[in-house]
Image (cartoon, rainbow, N blue to C red):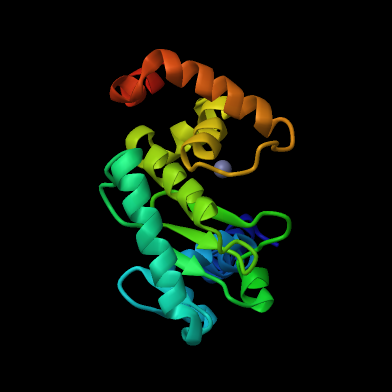
Length: 198
Ligand SMILES: [Zn+2]
């Protein structure tokens, strides 16, 4: 094969890879990064109103009530949310599977949304995820997730959500104690300012 033909073959190959990746990468992301589905839960058969997406419409009122209570709680006792995240409530195990749940009961997706599994419909778990949303808003998602200490991130969420479990599995129990000792010194007014320095 001449150099020219080899080159054009190579360019063609690169072009094919590029064209293929345009189609394949979003599909792969959709399939592999299940939390991304929170961006368009309708594609998974959920129905959404302003805030709440759900797989079983007969439980929409219950989900909306839980969500409204959690928003009020976190807004008044932890901090004002700049945006209300979308909340995906899975009522059935099949929905939880689609959103990638294994051991977790709920998770946050940056400032885009929170996802509640069919086993996670508890007021304190929804408050917990909204506190992560608040951390993401105030400190930045990547920064909060990667650069803030786990005792702050998780300790705060377990403590200020008023999680009723007296004893959490370690290391979470330790995180909560460490946060509570720090918070006692810092106080609510300086919470975010001091969190900047952690
Ligand atoms: Zn957490």
